Length: 46
Image (cartoon, rainbow, N blue to C red; front, side):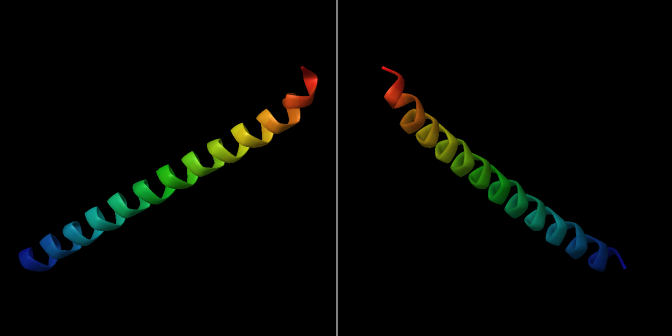
């Protein structure tokens, strides 16, 4: 039972790290998209 519990914790930790990295990269991509879209929109205001 102890070995099974350790394997489950290791698996959840890997999933957690992968999930964190996925959402971090996804968020950074969205920030870049909005930044470049906004810069193109407000470029004509000069």
